[in-house]
Length: 402
Ligand SMILES: Cc1ncc(COP(=O)(O)O)c(C=O)c1O
Image 1 (tube, rainbow, N blue to C red):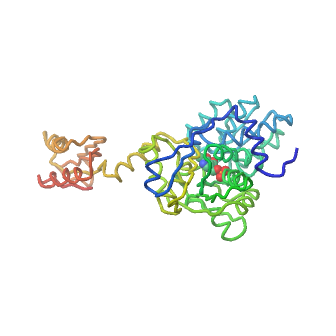
Image 2: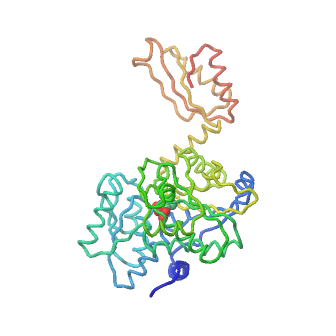
Image 3: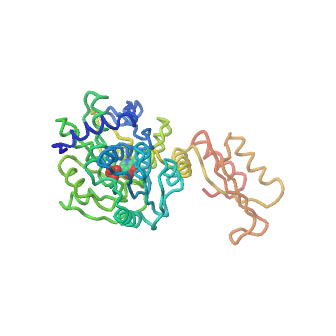
């Protein structure tokens, strides 16, 4: 069967996959609407099956392959594509072999195995896993499922736009995270081919600005990639299909810093009780950085995934609390004698500080004989209280370092 438009493919995809995916909620956020002077709606694909939108494209692709007689698929991924393909393969009873880099987070490896896929760890980085997967699929005669540069995958991701058009009568702007460009190609194609007058804006981390650079040069460019909280958006270059679609349908691409990604993740947890991974939070990060002006407009932000390690989450929370003045970290030098530590702790207690971490060192090159250094992380009700704790300790003669 041949289709004229991605919209038509997406309409078919939605019929096929709707039994196996969630129609994820679209919620208006009062907090963010107030903060940015427009109406902000969040589309929660972090609540999707497999923890991200990736299940959509994978289900449609594997359904099509299944009807062509394919019973074995191969994919390469360090995260969400792996889980999406593994989930979709389990629905159709198709064997899935997923190549992941040896550095892939254990939680993601285990989640992928949990859906019944075979996981092969190969190479230090994604590209090495990708090479191995491509040659393995040739050897086995199994179908290789590309994470983004594939019209079925793109049409599957485009089903988000079909849902959006049912959930909200009109909107002016949609903010979409951009990795290899499959997600934004699907959403932009469906909206524009439906004749919607919506600005589609793609968000990339500064760590991997491949579409921004490619659009600037007018050709596909490969960029150096740095580590990022948005680990799902670290493709080195656009695909040829996604580049053409982005050029045709996407209105702008903006980049965001690691700082604002961390802040966006923190705010989503604090204000909306929503866990988004870094890649899923870049849309909100763009608003926080003032990269997109939505004043007086209605803006949909795609929260594309929620698969984040608890250890990373812990770091984001601690960082957010420190930035907000709800946590302070400092060290105190004191005489190494019985009762001294108690005196320091009494000051913290007096101001109702809650100790989160404490270390006590009495040896080492930087510590004078007879002295000890206490390192503290303390939860406090407000920034002022932190300043009062520090000044009281200083006035009692302690050397305090922040
Ligand atoms: C959570 C999340 N959001 C967005 C993307 C970007 O998708 P695409 O590569 O289709 O641009 C990914 C890709 O893995 C992802 O995992």
